[in-house]
Image: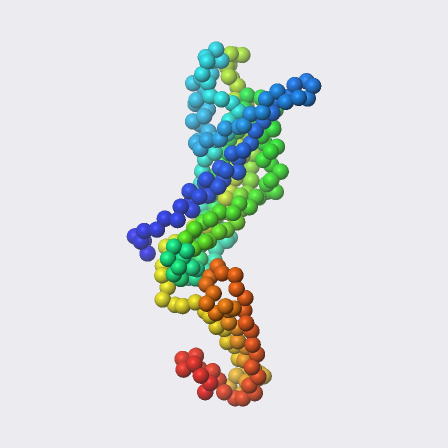
Length: 267
């Protein structure tokens, strides 16, 4: 187990997917007649809030020609925590077809983890901050599903709920009129993702036939066998991920025999 190398980049993909939700937000300033004065796309970077606050404080002199551009947004991953409410059986597995070598793989059920994120919004004007916040909040009620390709080799895509947990506000403004003001909105989110372990080849073949015998009573030792139900994929050569159907058939028997899976015949 431990020591077997694997890396599905699930946490990295979750971070990137979370950031893409907010990379196309803009604000507008209008003239008194209602015409658009400017339309500014809000920059987005990965990093802690303290880093951007320190940058603003270092360049707090408004007479300087260079300063960090506001409005601006930053986000960061803050926590990773196991979610026991979404736990499944630790020994449960499923089979999947590896798209790289077309082999059948045995995959253990994923482990549920919650990844915490913070989205920080920095603005000079409160109206700028409200424009940004109002473009975000309507999509979270309180969650927004994001489809993430967790394990691309087996085509494992899942809808990851991004839950909005809380919203905080602070006005980081101290000093004289020459001091730069920074309004900060902090939105905290939880991404309910799944982590997969190593993926191994399986010696077991795909199930290509299902057969069930129906008896007249629950005591199969004394009851007569009435009929047999059989289902096979159509086409029989279908692989996981293919578009296929099933061929079903019923066979009426009315005997006292039993089917032996080891001998694969009625006895």
